[in-house]
Length: 239
Image (cartoon, rainbow, N blue to C red; front, side, top):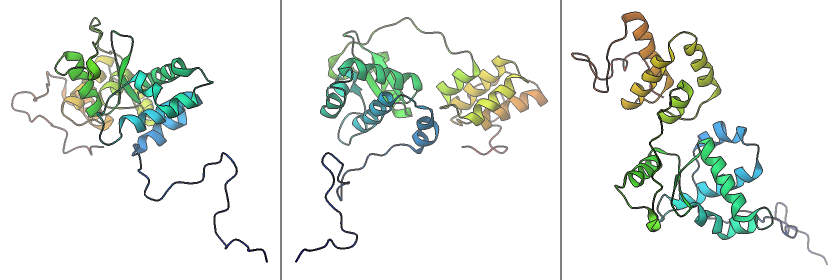
């Protein structure tokens, strides 16, 4: 008599097919922004593959939140995936693409390698400390000392640097603001929002509205004399 599988029982997976996640397997946390703001824009499968692996590798518990690009490329899953698809050179190119997209940040080393972090506030602070010499480069690397780059001057660039990834809604709002206000006003409003730890377009837009109606003055991170540091807190909702 031939036994029949119980209803709902898992049948043997085809050779080479993934058999399913194990109970209790460690999970990797990926910000929801990745799925809503980054994933729809990624068209290159190699960039996506390396980007996802880097997010996993750099954020593993018990490891520093920074890795060398060469270390990411040499890990067995990456080396196996790219063994016949360009090897370490293709992995490095995909990492560079992820840095250009803003998902990762990197810092060049004199030996040709690079330090890579996830583009979070903590990751940016860590690279800034290493770049300034306040903290040694992991693994004893020497940071490339480049000439200071000019500060971004376009509103979209400043928004990405100070607040975060551009969404279609913010892109449209910036275009509308540029048709209405001088670009220098928009840039300064975004930087004021960042300095005041109110990183949202709504906050920067509230500053612009105030300058338009009440006149522009010399606001600073601490506020003008006799004015609180955050004069728009009662008018807007922080994201």
